[in-house]
Length: 515
Image 1 (cartoon, helix red, strand yellow):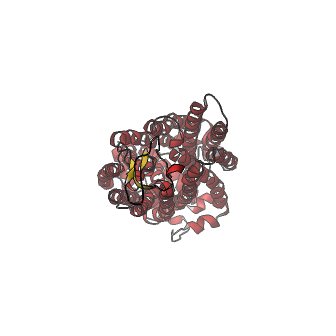
Image 2 (image 1 turned 45 degrees about the vertical axis):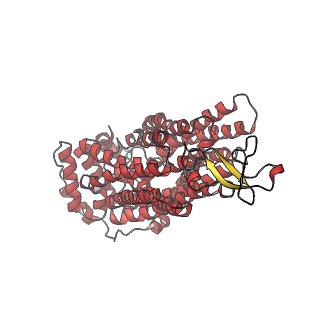
Image 3 (image 1 turned 90 degrees about the vertical axis):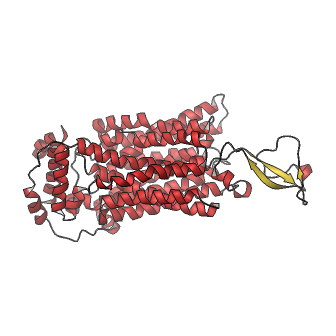
């Protein structure tokens, strides 16, 4: 018996239990709740880094305040005829309380805000790297709940930061929590859902809705302190879902814990109102496989020629998506109009894009859907860059429109890339493989805030880079094998064998699993 047979058996067992029933709704719904904590935590700097209106109180060496006629807002140096004056105190608009106003991050400290954002993205990189190994070694469940615990504690402590240095450290740990969550949550979800319904996980715009809600919450609260408290408050109840969500039965089988896996399968069947499927062959199949210690590492992925090739090609797309998505998000102040409205629009625009992604995933597959959206972003991103450097009557409207189109495209393209990535790795290294790509994406996300800062003086560079990277990514994705109508592979041995469900010998299974 082969590893391929194990993959087919587990997929067929899941279909018999109910590929997407009451159990999956409860588990997937519970796992999706973590996205509100993660989305609010990551996007906090879109509001927290905003610069309120401010002005200097000018004074001389005796510290007497001198009133200067005329508008002197948001300037760090006095007029030439008042060269003997210095800025005694910076006065910020009290209607907007961000970390900029809290820690006076303007003038010679104006670079600190984007640096903190980069530090946060560095935390995502570290969290992604650690979660990839941790999730495959110790299980999806403890890794997932570790992310929630880190987010809860870090947001609470960050709210009471006494200086920007302490705040930066806590943003790093918040980034770690987000990185852990983003690495494990999709892998965790798809291992409970049959192949027919996996693309549907992308179509539910949970992330977009929660990200858009952050714009509304920011409008109501407009205070960085209370935003951190609110994020911690919505995270705390999620810890109690520990008693609802079981460990992934695929991970249990891959780690030779068949008895526990059968208990989870029984629970799935019971919740979905289906009879417990016959799993008597499961132990026999597992015992027939080559025995190893299952302690796979990143090196095992990189030593496998097929997985290495896939990883490199996918990594180009991930680093490009990481840069493009967060450059547009953190560059929200480059758009004209209300900050809160633009934050809302940049998030809610992903809702229709995910529905389109779901439709095209079924029609043309994961690879070509991703390819199509990447080309779309390459075109719209380049257009924004061009419009930014030319003079036109409708300049600001065009920039806003094409920037929203770019966000729509990268949101859909990245979601498709996530599904393509998770389905490209076998269960025993799926979290490691997904962790590799999440780590690579954070490199792009770390660069994004710095390019946003540079684009304040070098117009268009941010969006030109978006367009170029997404074009390169489209070419790379076109070289990756599609995973449409394939069962999830479960072992490294499976990955070496061709198991696409598209041949005549697999026709019966295809009808069972996907129709």
